[in-house]
Amino acid sequence: MAQATLPPEVLDDAKARRYSADAAGLGRLRAGAFVAPALALISLFLVFPALWVLYLGLSNYRLTGAAAAAPQLVGFDNFVKALTDPEFWNSTWLTFEFVLGSAVIGQVVLGFLLAWIMRDRTGPLKRIVEGLVILAWILPSAVVSFLWVALLDRDDGTLNTLLHSQDFAPLLDHPMLSIIIFNIWRGAAFSMMLYGAALGNVPPSHLESARLAGASGWQQLRDVVFPHIRGHVLTNLLLISLWTFNDFTPFLLTAGGPDGKTEVLAVHVYQVALQGGELGYGAAVSTVILLINLVVAVFYLRLLRSKK
Amino acid sequence: MTRFVLHRIGFYVLIAVLLAFFTVPLLWLASAPFTSDPTYKVRLPDFTSENFRAILDNPYALGSLWNSVLLAAGTAVLVVVFAALAAYALSRVHLPGRDALLYTLLLLSSIITGTAAMVPLFQLAVELHLIDSQLGLILIMTGGLLPAAIFMMKDFMDSTPKSYEESARVFGASPLQIVRHVVVPLVRPGLATIAVWAVANVWGNFLMPYLLLSDVDKQPAAVIMYTLYTEGGQANIKLLATFGLLYSVPVVLMYLFVSKKYGFRFHGGIKR
Image 1 (cartoon, helix red, strand yellow):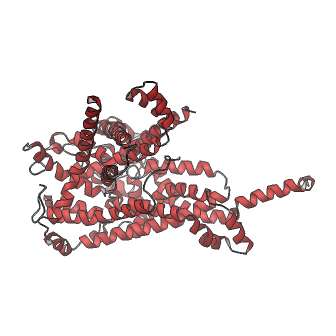
Image 2 (image 1 turned 30 degrees about the vertical axis):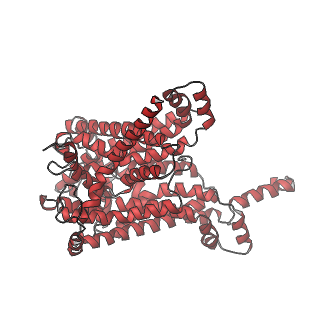
């Protein structure tokens, strides 16, 4: 009855709005059917594993043996074992070094540097530099990691040739530094492109007035450019931190060795769960990884929101 | 004046150092496949075709490239179709809890893809008899890529005008017909973007096929590349160099094609 008392134009208006939003006349039922296949695959292969990993972490499930047939719940034993295991802490520390060195510092600084020096350029030099940086990013990881094995080889590696050194084996002597530099090389393109787009949003007039006021290059960066691109910097940090944290590519370069010196958490899970067969323990480590990822994501999203 | 000259010199030195850093690791891939008896040393190639003949004789090399094509194409098709349908429905009809759902899924997918879900995905594949099944791998990778794809696709759907759909509906077209004949042509650039993104993702993915496919005949190029490197303790450099090049060429071509046609860059940054 309420509807009948509404003036006709209001009714028409409401109807028209609904009509234009759902222009094809889909209706909720058919809309649900359109979403269903995607949702089914996501639930089965993304949501379910995420929940399952929580359960597995509490069990003593193994790849083979008695515990494979009848796994039992063991409570927080796996977590206690992880938190008292020096190898786990070693991996966590290495992952921290890897993310901080290669993503938060390396890719951000190099990516910004590339975007900054190329910002007002056009022509072949810009195309060549950007093309090469992007090439490092789009080549398959199995190929680039082998290219770096060749580059850093002890006997014939190009690095040894360039340095006129002999028997210098970075992958054995400085394994962590090697994979950090490798990952900077590999991932700088994303930051470069993101900052390139961000710098395009900085009004040239602001830079001009800062220059006229006698601001140095560094002051211009800090007081004019950075406030404009703060959101981009945080988005970029969030994405590359999570990507680097979960990156499995170091495995292709060093397989976690020598002596676990490059066994970042992603590789550590693979080693204990699928090489060692301790699926339950591996799942507990995965849960810890998920939690750390969540903390990182929430931390950046908070910072991002605090600007408004 | 001297300051200006020094500035210029500094700039070009910096460019030269950066160029060297990004070029030197790639040199080997450009020279070794064309050099007879290649080692890890970068040498001037003598343009032999012998290495390519050797790769043709390898029983797994060409087959694995074909497997990569199958996996990439299969995943891209499923991702594009399912993401387009879901994004269209989510863009036009306000289903309850839509935005919260989208953000949760996006966060979940960026967090769980790959390593953290390694154990449960492996187990799930065992239970569902999807180990050594290329279709299973395609479904699993589709599930992982869909949230981000729906997210990107919804942006495209939101920005298309609705008047065409209204007129099509007035003429009695069914919703599926409207999607096929009206919406799809309008969002074609978006579909292409998602397809390329999905192909690039699957083409380079090493971990998932390495976990889930143990039959050499079904493994994609990423896994075979690694096998050639570790097999028998001694890397077969001749095969590796040539195979690495063959495996890389398709993504490079795809990148060149896309950057020429659509411009491969971000416009104004990423929206979350």
